[in-house]
Length: 621
Image (cartoon, rainbow, N blue to C red):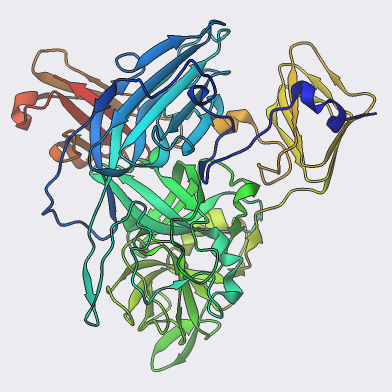
């Protein structure tokens, strides 16, 4: 009998995250921070200096400007070859005036064995990564989360035995600006300058860990997230919540508001921020740490009722301590021609106003609706707390912690009213995901931090790429056959019993990290890599066949509503070759003269959406 603790140093890969601002990644540190002969300090810095008018009127959930660029692993940065034949590519970018930077990629492909990081070259302890081939998406797009400051380094490491070429191409740099929010509320002025909108919300808000208002919602808060929404004209802030389904299988469904998206959403670049909250009731002096997941797929949306159901690109790791909130689609007639939430008790909202740390608000009265078929729940006045821009999409809870609706609109200030999109109004579509094959009208929440205490594997593992996990004891008698690539993970003890065998051509490793998958059972690497947008079933060809002209070609197999936009480097819409046109199946081709678009920019951006797929790319003169 072989215990993993006695041989762990032979083949263990420790999965750890050392920085406080983490994105789903695979541990390690950038090679330039480990090796003495490689440094980012001497890199030539590419300065992207594009300013915007200070007089612009910002939406109150606006976060960052987009700067579209043509920077990739082939035309920018520096390659360094190490003594063992391995290579490192580095690209350093400075954006004057940026309070933070996050990046969107139109091409992102990492070969197996390679790894990628982004980090702050001044404060080198702040980095994201490593990212590897399991972060590749079927759409080819990717995003890396927020790095504070006005400089960022991209670093790709390719071992000597990796022959396949990586694809790393930036679509845009997202520049978070230093913005002054001045609001007169009850003759007081709230003023702030911030990076992550930390400290931005009104003083009448309550931190989620305040007592007694937050006492009964310590589970529910774990499902509420801040969302960094990527649109063609910039980055915006919304809120949302993980939601349970009747299969209770921890599928990472997430509810938000339909108005948080736009006609051509860049879903593969949306960032979902977990656990961004004060540890206690008082506001901390600095921005707290958080974790994040990048990318999602739209499952359902409707502007009537303002609901958006997403599926995150990855299972939520146990280390995030997630909670999948329950729901209640019932109502009850009371009096005066109005219907109220079934429990008739107070209602609560957990949210991220203006992107600030997590807050909670309470209305002592029940929420009401004019009739059961109305799309909205109404809160007349918040008795404790409020909501603001950035709170959109946040869940309205009954006193029993079940979601009734999502925040749609409201009035800025304290002691004001809000409207919430009612889940019940769109239930005939939502139930396909949240209540498949069931007629239940209410469901409790589910703890997402589940991992079996013990797991005993005996069946053959054949042609599987995946992870098997347990929290205390993992016992393995299986044979690993075919081309399987398996990870066994247990935070305590792993035992390889007699009968365990790894055939030639298969690989395995053992780790001692906390559960990361959540289910305790296999998750395939194939599923991990095919994340984000579903398989792109429409091939969009864009080219400059004649100087000064650009031609768009695509084939539709079904009737679809097409929206095709052309934008400049700052995300401004210049032309709409197809403006929500309903097109029949067939082949389509449209040619435009670039000069007719009316700008002199060398680089243009196109954005195609057919209701199922979004594709964004670059056009060169």
